[in-house]
Image (cartoon, rainbow, N blue to C red):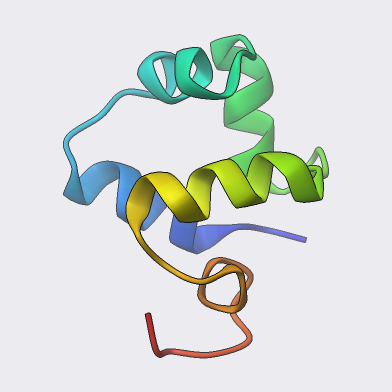
Length: 67
């Protein structure tokens, strides 16, 4: 699954992949793979991202357009 919204949110906040990797305690390459959809993100990390951005899990995974 490709997570387009985590990239969109990251760019809106003007953050690098490395900075998000630090927040999630993963390296930049791993975070890049999340954005590209070549690596799955655990539910725990999705929750961290949703809390960080102030959005719902459904929004992050594309199930709704409502934040």
